[in-house]
Length: 133
Image: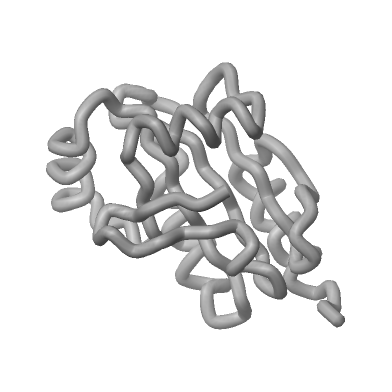
């Protein structure tokens, strides 16, 4: 699945092979999504150098909404907002509600779904501890 981030650069799950990737489906009008961002930003800061990546897929109606939000929130990971790409990703991952998060291990397989807070932190640490051939 090929995606394009806010900066126009390609984003691919396969490029993250060997890393631990969190795929986060969210929107600016989703209070639980927004409530999780401070913890997720800290998790990212604590583990990015060890190979932890995050890709956020916004379900917002307009890129302008996401641009304005990003200007305030300064999320350090890549964001995808292109409606057709997000729709295709939602279909592939069978996302019906948000927030929906998928933790992908170093081997490219989904390790956990819809974890938050300390449960997510522990799952990320377990995934990062796994060796990749």
